[in-house]
Length: 402
Image (tube, rainbow, N blue to C red; front, side, top):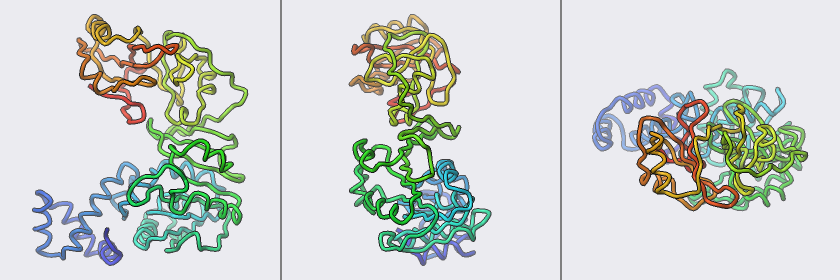
C-alpha cells in the first residue's frame, strides 16, 4: 500500500502533475509504467496509478472522488456520501462528534457540514487521507484528524460515530467479535458518551443485535441493503427496528400493532419489498400500508388487487402465474410474445442464471419471471413492472438479465 511520503508527494503540485500525466498516458499498464518511469521513481509511479484506480472505485460513492485521497480498505468500507449525509443529519446540529475509526473520512466530512468533528484512525496513511479530504468541504477547519488507537483514548464529546473494521486478514467477518476493534467496545464508548451510532454489516446476526440493546436501522441505497446503524441515546430513529430507503430518504419503522399479513394466491399486483425492509423484518408493516397479502408466510413477496406507490416496495403487474414447470413457462412466454428481461427468485432452490439460459421466449415485449412459492408450492409468476422501466439488478434480489 502507498505510504505517507508518496501520498504527501501526490498532494503537492508535482504530484498533481504526475497524477494528470498518469491519467492521460495511453496503453497497457506495463506500457504506462515504462513511460512514467522515465521521469519518476517506481514508488511514485505505483502510488499515482494506485490512487487513480482508487478514485475510480470511489467515484460511485463520492461525487468529489477525483479531488480526494484514499486507501484500499478506506474505499471498500466507506459509506456512500448520500448514506453518510443521511446518518449525520441524525446528530444535533452544532454537536461535537467523535468519528472513531474514521477511515478516509467520509462520515466525518458529512458530520463536519453540521458541526465540529474529532476523527481518529489507527493507520497513519488512512488518517492522513481523512485530514486531506477535509479540504473538499466548505468548513475544513471543523474536522480535525489524529492517528490513534481509539480503545486507548479518553473519550469526551456530545456524540460519537463508531465504524470498526469489518475485515480481518483481508476477509470479511460477520460477527461483532471479529470486528477491529471488537463490537463490544461500544459499551466503553457509551459509558463516556451516551449518544452513539455504530455502523455494522447488515448481515450481522439478529441475536447479536438484540443483545446489544440498540435501535437498529437497516439502510438501502438504490435497491441494495448496504449497512446497518445501531443507535443509542437520544439520537436516531425511535423504534427498535427501522428501514431507511435512499436516496429518496424514506423511513419505515416497526409497528407492533401491525397484524400479520393474510396469505393468498397471486392477484393483480406483485410487490417486492425493498431489501432494507426485508432485512428489518417489516413485512407486516409494508403489507398493511399496501393493503397486500403474502404469497407464502415465509416469503417476502406481497400481492394485492390494486396498485399502490411506495418507496418501500417495487410493484409489478401480474400477467399470469402457474405451478412451476419449465416447459410450460417457456411455452407461455412464446404464446404471449414475451421475451425474458429478468429472472428473480425467492424461496426456491433454482439459479436465475440457469433458468434464464433455458427460457427462450419470443417477441419484443419484456417479462419479468418470478420464481417463488405460493402456499408452500413452487410457482412461476409472469410480470411487468408497473412503470415499464427496467428492473434494478442487484445481488440481493437474485436477478438475472437475459
